[in-house]
Length: 281
Image (cartoon, rainbow, N blue to C red; front, side, top):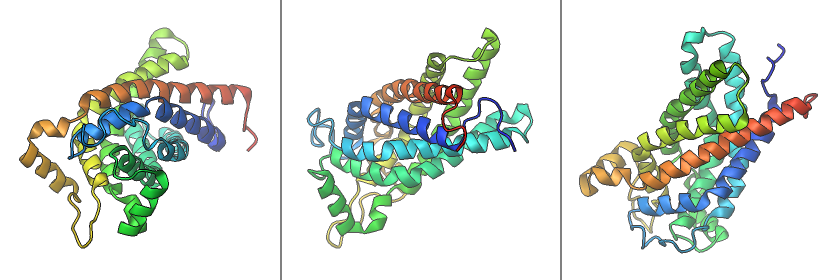
């Protein structure tokens, strides 16, 4: 079946998504480090404070492009296939479903690099190679997927809030202006949608951080392991306020990140489509 006009093909999704992922992760990495250290049980200062705020950047860079590329590839293809068979009044559910599918696929790439990145940010290891060796020797290959379910459980509510809002804002603006939306306008829509989703899902992000930072000692159990148990334990021992640790840098980071990430994705995607790049692949 031929693609609809403006729908990117596989190679265009991969290229635009990869560029967007790299751009946002490198540009906003210090805010992500601050957020991680605020959420760590050891506390902000003990986890490094403002020192070495680029710790873990190498791991983030390795995973950012393939993770984002996998997300947008899945999202665009599932959305295009679903929109052809679903009534317009149900489009928000299409966007939720497509974005959820994208996150599940992206997390297969993203989680191992996220585990290593956060352990470097929290000063659990001094180097990338040390973090990889330490994680493997203590937990084996499954250690690199510590928090996979938690990450998916966090990302799906986030993306189910973000992408329906994002698509709605884009469509509303297009109808008001009577022309296709520009990339910088899409970036503003992405910023508003991302900031809203970030604030509402901060408790799940705190849980994900605690689970990923948990490591096994010699014969010891993990400090945090389950989603519900971690959520209730934090609330019981540290209060509800602890579940919103890092909400300010997280909201700022993802608001700015949404602008950079979705704006650059839309810009690169439109450039590739207009130039006919990868059209014959």
